Length: 505
Ligand SMILES: Cc1cc2nc3c(=O)[nH]c(=O)nc-3n(C[C@H](O)[C@H](O)[C@H](O)COP(=O)(O)O)c2cc1C
Image (cartoon, rainbow, N blue to C red):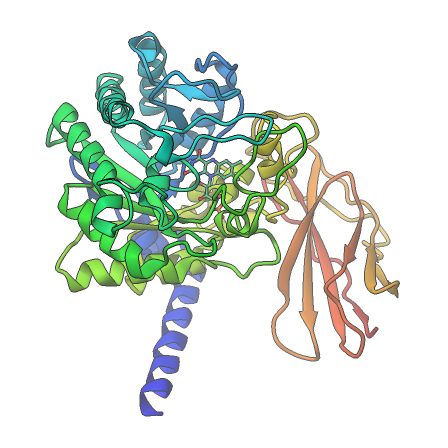
């Protein structure tokens, strides 16, 4: 009992301290927040702990070349001063796969060199490509599995990873990340559902064989002083799949093999993907897909316990390899808490940085209240699924990149206010308000809610600027709810809060 009370007290004090950090001046924030402490990964020094984990953009053609849209997308993250930008998964081989970047031949080298140089010229952000191998898949439902690969084909995978990593170094990137997560080849070897019956399947030792061969080949090609990171699933999130119990042992093996950071993801498997007539299977449609990119109805930081267990196990084995935690980590408070408690060393934010690439710069400057906040509607995910250009649905209509503005004038409500009203109909609460105006453009509205008769208001979601209605489908009769909304503009300036409305369904 005493230890529970002590734990609760320590947790409370930690949260209190972080709140104090966030309310202090920008200079103070810089001095005290671990999020903005540099970290060194092999020879690469990151200026902060914020990482953009790889995020496919579907902005390239099927030829896999870097174009202006791709360059603009990554320069935008650099302008926001993201510590480490991991460029979306790019193939080490030549198999067809819709719009996907490539690093499988020297033909791509010059354009990658240009991208890396442009990012370096923009800000202190560091940049590394994520390199991937995937198996064949067809629209008729057939897919190649790891047991169909011959030993020669396995050797070719090792060689392709080694060659692509050497190109990453030649291109001037700050390192390379090996994709061993989700539904792809190396992850399928690591899987507990790996069906091979030879030296590459059945036991954990055998399942690790190919990934460790790949690490060895990559290291041999890039040298000792080049950062080699790795991303893998800390839990497969499918029936019979592995959990953190095995993942922590894998992480230790990766670290001992010389990996410089371990990025922990979850799920995203073919095994529970939902088939769609005439479409290749998309590995993020089942429960494991939810766990990989948790949507609005999952708690924040849902996959934290997995990366925390991996970190704990590494520390217990005297291994200091940095660990990255990702999955619905969106607030500076949560990110800081994870770092301060030693759960992880790096914070991955994919969708939050898509919504607002200036997240790091704004938070560093003490302007958290100007961040455009992801609402995890997963429109980006469904664009990826359909091979359409990935964008954020909060961006202005038709925009292909996150907008930029240094305006400081906040939106204003009409003279008679927001006139926020609410009613309960057919099991949901409908909120309605008057549109705000702005010298540039009203970009969106944050909706805040408080349940019951006390406690804090919590930001529930964001609504794009063209709308002035929101339906809360998570309300139940017998409870009391209060709401207010705030308009924001492109720069993230927030309006005054609207009037507060209360509803008791
Ligand atoms: C559109 C989209 C594309 C993604 N592409 C990749 C990818 O190429 N490689 C990868 O390891 N993860 C990929 N992910 C997963 C993200 O890196 C990240 O782990 C996941 O979105 C959870 O983090 P978040 O809650 O900060 O978004 C993608 C996610 C999204 C939404």
